[in-house]
Amino acid sequence: MMNRKTFVSACLFLSFFTPTLNAAYIYDFHIFNNADYENNPNLAFTAEVFDLGGQAVFEFRNSSTMNSVITEIYFDSEGLLELDHITNYIVDEDNKIGTKFESAESGDVHPSNLPAAHLLDPVFEANVDLSAGACNPSPKWGIGPDEKLQIVFNIEQGHNFSDIINGLNSGTDLRIGLHIQSVDTEGVSVSAVNKVPEPITVCLLSLGGLALLRKRRVGTA
Image (cartoon, rainbow, N blue to C red):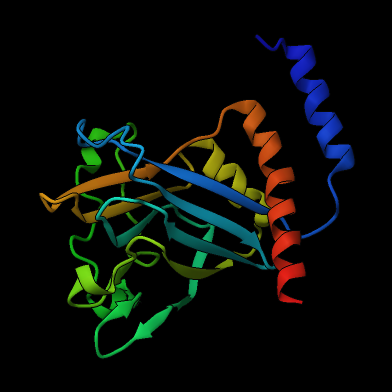
């Protein structure tokens, strides 16, 4: 077991050798309202968070090998973020292949709060101004396996990207909830919330995310 001195030294080491590039962090999600799917390895959902200087980009991915569609995305936060735009990845408009989300203002977020929110401590309370939902029919336009979606937020005045990451790592100040439908052959619906990293993982997230970001930039150069 890592003692406090070793943990602090590890963080200092990583901080010293971390390159000065825009940060990227990856968060997994935990299904909390259905024990049958809570630890199913065939269900995998992530949010990759990028720093664009004054903006934070959240890229949601469904890497599941089981039927599943993310149809609503909720943010439990106040005073940190302001929705700027949603980047959809439409492959085929006629056959409804790809992702097509709109903000809560369009009326496409149903329900307005994360289902089973009362099971979380503290209770999850979605900010309607930050929420987004798949257009009708949501199982077609949601984030299915091997699909992704980006939501771009402006960072509110008086805050910075570090506040966003600290909020996610706290497990209370900023939380992300997913409503996932059409799961497995039974077509059940479940709810998930972003996992809070272990302390040493918080240090490693920055280094690993930066490596991914550098690889992505090289590949797109």
